[in-house]
Every structure is written in C-alpha cells, then in structure tokens.
Image (tube, rainbow, N blue to C red; front, side, top):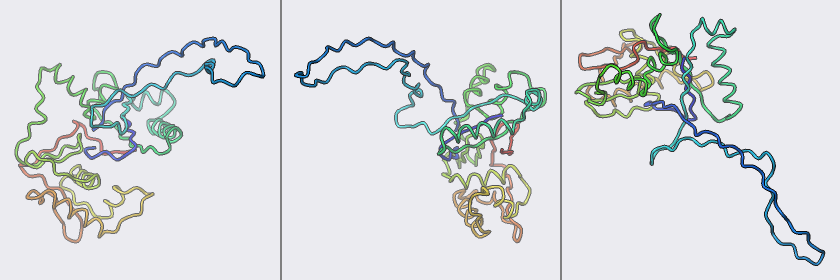
Length: 267
C-alpha cells in the first residue's frame, strides 16, 4: 500500500519522491550565567539571558532540494497486506483513515491522496519493496535495472503518443502535451478502461469529489474537447460515442506506461 500526502495537486505529472530528514541534534546543555547584583543607583543594563533548562533543539530540516525547486509534499510507502493487517487487528482502510486524521490534526491545510498498490500473488521480497516497484518508484526501478544489468531508456521517446501513467504525463512525438490535472485524470480514467464506452455520469461520479460542486454534462464535453485539442493529430484516440459518452481506442502508435499491475482503486 502506498500513501501519498501532498499540500497541492501533483501533476499530473503528478512524480513522488521520499523526503529524508537530518538527524535530530541533542539539546545544548544549560550554562550557568553570572549576573552581578546591582544597587538602586545602577542603571539597568541589558545582559545575557539564561538558557532555559530542557530547551528543545531546532526541528530537523528537510534535505536541501535543488536550486529552482521547492518541496511540495512527500510520499510514504507502507508495506502490509490484508493478512498481516488482519493479524494486527486492523485493515488497510483503517490505517489510511488513521494517517489521514493524523495529517489533518498536524497540518489542517494539507491535502492527501492514497492508492492501493497491487502485486502478483506470492511476489517475493519485502512488502515495502514490492509496493515501491508496483507503484513505479524511480529509485526502486533504478535499483532493479542495476541488479538486472539494464540501462535506463525511459527518456528516449519515439514518435507517437506515450501515456505515462506512472509519471502522470503525456508525450506527443517526444514533446509534453501539457495537460492539466483534470485533463490527465480524464484521459487516465478512459485508458484504464480501454475499449469500454464511459458515460458522462460515470465520469462525473468518479472524477469529482462529493464535496465539490458536481459539473454538468456540458462541462464534461468541454473538458474532453480541450483534452482532444491538446492531443493534436492524435486526438482520435479519445472517441465520442454519440448519445452515450466517450471511449479510449489504442492505436499502433500509442504506448501506455504504467506499473505492471495498475491500481485504479483509490481510498
């Protein structure tokens, strides 16, 4: 299971990276401060302030990020299956909700997103490593390629359409399509249900939160039209089924990149 907590929408290109923190520093010992007694004739003079006993050290800082970037959130990978959760007297859903409640208590302005990581039954290795690979964690993938003696060619983009679900991006002939978060979510929903016609009501129910104002069917049509416009000469991969809804049709020049066992399930 993987839990991704972020204070802002990821783009979709929505990538995740684990945040490391520096080790906490021990509190500095209190030092005795000598203050000379003053007589009434003495003028008040600013003096050293005693250090309070038991003062806490400064909070650990997030590892420095490259210049020109900023930390926008973090990813927490949790490795545990249903059987182990049950043996601990809990469920995956309860763990998710508890972490969400903790986040809301500590940082009410934070936004959270949680998804289930699926893997083939009996997959070996540590649970957390299986989760990281299933969710296409870049560091885990790089380690696996190194172990297998493979080279990273993920940035060599042939002509055509690459829908990279793991990195939340779409490339057209090697160039980013520049989809908005909602446009990518719409395309991803259709891609994961390839060949099936999705009506507008289903799109509204699954792509808009219950707390948000539900859009009209006309709004869905506008989003689809903008999405197809950005797909340029590949726009016919999103088909309009008149009177019903929309469908994703894969062409020979369309490549889908995702985890080996994609999980559209979201807590």
